[in-house]
Length: 114
Length: 111
Image (cartoon, rainbow over all chains, first blue to last red):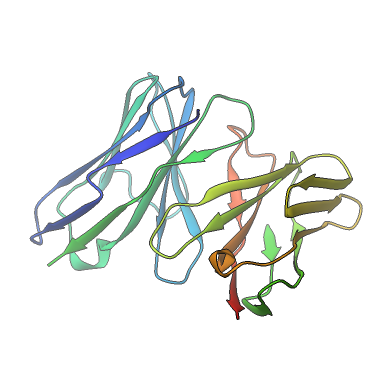
């Protein structure tokens, strides 16, 4: 149980384009989903907290207009990186929780912006 | 501020025991997690402690002392596949069970 999927697993795009990453909880309903980014050999940095049907809560320093988050249902949240630039290249990971403490992580999406 | 400290790197020998320490200073405390992360993969859940004491789960055990702001992850009978990063994370008081992660400890297991 508690499986979280992400799609795509890997994406390469041109600078200036937008990229959408999907996060799905496959066998449970996620009241809250989280989006993280991770740089090589660094720990996870929380970007935003997403609750179904409400606006995401962004961490300080994260541009909400650049990283659009939509939590359309209890099993799906999407992160759209708008007008991507090379500095947005990173490993993006989502996690989901039922409201009980444990977060279950998706397999991650590796984004490379050329 | 909020701070979680763990050693950057550790090495150990196959079959041995290793203890990875984590100290934390956070505004509020609602539990501490240990996750394992292999390179290029997402973290996988190892343990959760909210009360003081030792939680044992197979080869892995986790200990918590809330008064000392201290936890450790104990790995026994080390295997080569245990080479990974181990992330200590705390749920503070920020709501939504947000996790605050330490920088992670990279463990290398040698034959």
